[in-house]
Image 1: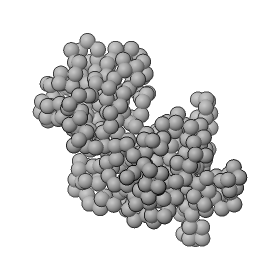
Image 2: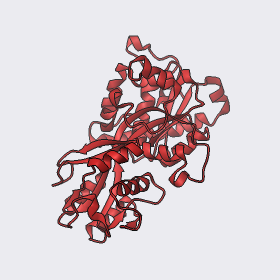
Image 3: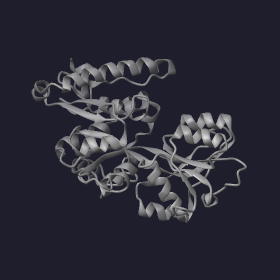
Image 4: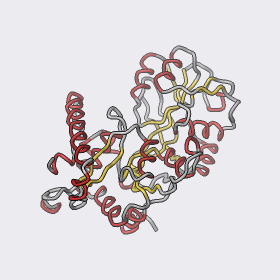
Length: 354
């Protein structure tokens, strides 16, 4: 396997017709990379492979992980950055690794099974502080942040003309908080509690997105939460089949919630993103790039500097629609756990930290 193959720089096509080809190429690349990484001799000889745990191949984390891998890679023999070549870490071959997502990724990082991974800020927060599904686990306090990449927005969907206009109206209503143990479940309960609705004040359900959407459409559910990058395809479909609204999350309750859980950040869902749904004030949680505190500080400094190198702007902007949202100015928004020392050094150098 050569260095070019190992980088897996496959980009999301500008037209939908190219997506399938990109995915096939990426999967073939990941298989090849897996074979190489399974060889101790190969890793020992090169010493330059760097894994990024992502998510399912049909999700957003998978292509975003591939973009980041492309941005920070600079395989041996590549053209110099100043000569128009790669501006990644010299000698580094970064690869994206398909996983089940945030929960698996934080476990992989803290067990040193991968060098880094992507995670929702709320899941990372639960892991770091031993909350929710991590309550009986230890050893996650070594998680550290390289950057907050882009926002994932809190959507709280209801049917129009249901008499539900604010969070407080959900008292005694059937509300899906997402699958038990998920980041969505944790966040939904926290948001409801901040608005004076403790467990028992509403009829809690724990459906996944597909089932929540179906039950709301059929009138068997009054509201459901989903946290994802907008637009959410399932909500696009639901809005085409039923008249829905999104409840705003704002005001003093939102301010108090953000004081307690700093991973929440104010956000707005644009109008007409979903059919006949107005612009809605809400909250977001960041999609984080995480590593272990034990990873070499110089290596993390180089990774952070490479990610934000001006020449990598075209990689992020042209690779995937969400890539355009990965911005240096929001890299430190809503941090829910500490920065890695190497990343902190970079942000201090550019004046982003005191």
